Image (cartoon, rainbow, N blue to C red; front, side, top):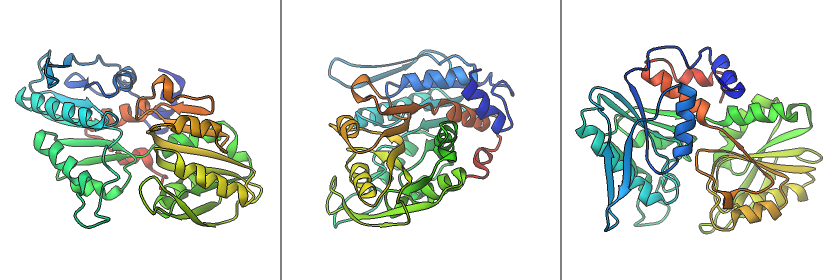
Length: 336
């Protein structure tokens, strides 16, 4: 077992070799097979055999190539870009396992697509995050395992159990290993909605908290209104759940530096990095960007300032505990 995986297992009071996993099966679609294989390595199990291709007219074809009858199925499929294709794949795979008489199917969805459309902002807008939840549930999912939802109330959109994991502790451990807990650091929430996440990291590092108050006049546009807290002369560590275009964190970093911060580091769980975000972050005012691999990061999205942490040990440990009917919440005792 790798060193990072040993740390996860030891800190959680368990090892991935405990318990009988003989009736557990791990499968993946095309969204993020690398993460799925890393989870399988952590658990010490073989990936299930499944074919997910296209018919000649572009429709999705799924074939489960081994028996799933009576098994506890874990299906790894973040609904990231191409979002609609990955969601459709997930729904068809769920239908296949339901018809294959699986005992239970847990959707392992590290990144929940459409999560930012969780409420009506303007008249006649859809609540797409609820629609996706309904589709997944109706297709045959018995349980959801996800990471750092954009809005925690999305858990309530499901009528099935939802295990919500936090990758903040993984980011916190990395920052400690890099020596930031010994430096003059302030943890910054890039908006009011992320205060709880930033507070948890600040407490983990034993550092003060600052908040950027902003407004969005329209999608993709950010106006910085005020910075609450003392950042002068400090290394500002911004923590967010999603970095998409990069505009929000770049504008936040510029405001922090104008206020006297000595340096700005950006951390996030989900590195969407759409359009020119990698270039903007590389050329922008932040010195480092730290993210996790809940979303696949192809070569074009990687840049010298970027550090990618693995989500596989946490997801693997949660899968093991779900299968063995053990506590998942105890993974985060002391966090939040």
